[in-house]
Length: 540
Image (cartoon, rainbow, N blue to C red; front, side):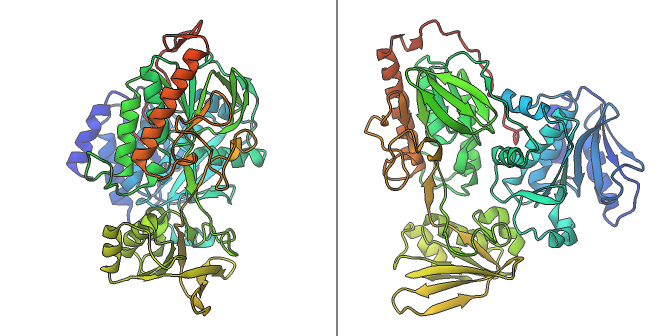
């Protein structure tokens, strides 16, 4: 570990209030010395953190397994491997929280976790190069700190190839409960909770929100949602954001070169900037929960996946969009076993192998360029006879030796051996010739579908599933507005979404003024103090 990295930890020196230990089992391993050097280096920064080697209850795992212990009590947080790379933050955050730092989860979600009355032992297989893995790891670690019935064991798949092979892991993070995979690939904490509810491992109890009636509830934490929330807050309104994941799909965007005033940024950087801007205002953030239903008339009722029911005088829907499926045989069957949607998450599993990217738009060619540094060859299949990608991306892809772009073809079937992907079948639309490519992975990048399923019986949608709005971002229901990629606005761009988010907020403000609201602040509404906007789990 570099001296600079150790030095950066000193700012957190006083954050550990309890006696915390890294408890390591006493078995030998070729990497044990570097393993101990790594952990002792971290412990040297904190007065109340040490490293202990002894026979542990987890000796059956690996000599490189350790548990975080707080005041001699197990926390349920375990790591197998040396958690460097993107998981370094997960280790430090888990250590700080085990030492008494605040849990960064919504109160309704914490209540839901506290109700668990049976043992749930998560095993989370990750890659240290996976950018999305830490969000899942850090939240499951917090679950373990909240409930003594939960453990989360984070395993570096690169150090345990036998386990990866036994469980047919080809996508990260892969979350297992009692050896059964419950989630894999591009997953959110809210979706993990949903699957556990479906399995009967977690219960959801309806409960009224402790918050007073809000003026505006913004559903969605991406560019449109954050823009809406900031503009509404600047009007003096009581505002809450409900978000499955703050930043939304923006967090998975690698490079952004068309955000005016900034020649180049990344999705992670822009998400951080959005967060820092939003926390300057009295905005409540409820993250890692989904909205299941909206009801009511003048006062809207918003039912969350945690069971909480919020009330608001207006609602802005900015839930964005998700990756579109091919809907061909083999796609669902091999999801997480060679079928993937996130190249920078799952690409490392296919180092030196032949892969296919379906789709030659901006996302598809960005994925191909990303994968070209890892895979042996990258074949891009495009349904249209041309690529809609920006010229700069088309030129880069054509200049990359191991990328081949095939236009005017239709994918027919993803092939496999019942365990993993082995190839893809496609047809040349001009000649009707059928081809089969033997590849190890299929990365699907064919556009987006709006996240509007929860309002399909409430609002008018167009044939694409987008919420129909006018130029004021008003929907078919009074008091409900929509903006960004979930709406019918053309041109799905970050900067366009931000503009429409602002429009939705200004329209909501005008609507509230007409609904007996004085000076933009609801009558008889208790002032809500700043809460909820704590640093996201991935932030230190």
